[in-house]
Image (tube, rainbow, N blue to C red; front, side):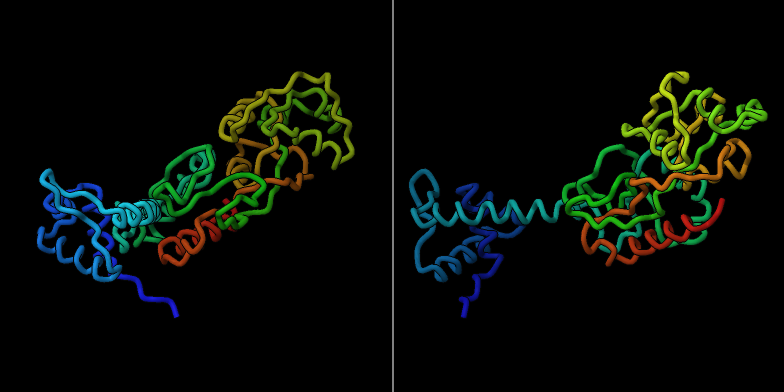
Amino acid sequence: MARPLPPLNSIRAFEIAARHLNFSRAAEEAGVTQGAISKQILLLEDYIGSKLFERLPGGLALTDEGRMLRLSVAPAFQLLEQSFERYSRRSPRSNVCRLSTLGSFAAEFLVPRLDDFERDCPHISLEILTSNRLVDFAREELDLSVRYGPGGWDDVVATELVPGELIPVCSPELFVKRGDLELKSFMNGSRRIQVFSNNEWRAWGEKIGIDIIEHAPSPFIIEDFVVAISAARSGQGLALIPELIARKHIKNGSLVAFCRDRLDWEQTYYITHAPNADNQPIVRDVINWLREQAKKPD
């Protein structure tokens, strides 16, 4: 049977005193008296059966046993500090949920629904941070992230928010100019707005049986959905936009779906979080709210 560990207070008192080599300064850092530090060190020395400090004319010094123990203990406390760093600025009962997401998702999906969020989740204060990078839940003080991509990221729980689906859209004015042109002629005579590096238009053309020629007007390469939507709305070209953020523009008439054929795409929006983060009630409530909102037509 494993021998019980010495009290954690004794180990912590030793780690602080070993750094300062001064019981008074160790007591100041720990917020206790010098006598309390001395008592904890004595308890630890009794446990291991060896002295850990020597009192010299110039102050304290570690014994050989003390130096060996410090080499083992210090990394363990550093690891504990790193593990709990993300909780250090927030009360366990905090009503704040911090969500990181793309600017396009925040602008096109979250912000128009904030009134609904306040009505549906009045007990939660939602903080939205926008970033294009993959967040590190182990090091950053975040509860959730909404990412766009293929899923399968390491060290996070990723749940698909909506199926990957792209809708071909253009401005109403460009759609009117199409007139009686068949789809192939319309496609090959119009500028395309390309968002993905693996060319979503080529995949869409293959699906509907249209050979999309390369000598059409050169495409705009725009790697941001908000900018791509803005370009399409202003008549700059055709775009394939995720259904989740295109639907409101189609409903209000600022965009037109010029073909019924949609493209099943390998990437989509995912709700991601650290393992077990959804055990927190406010995190679970935000996840459920996002799922319900994603199901609703605009």
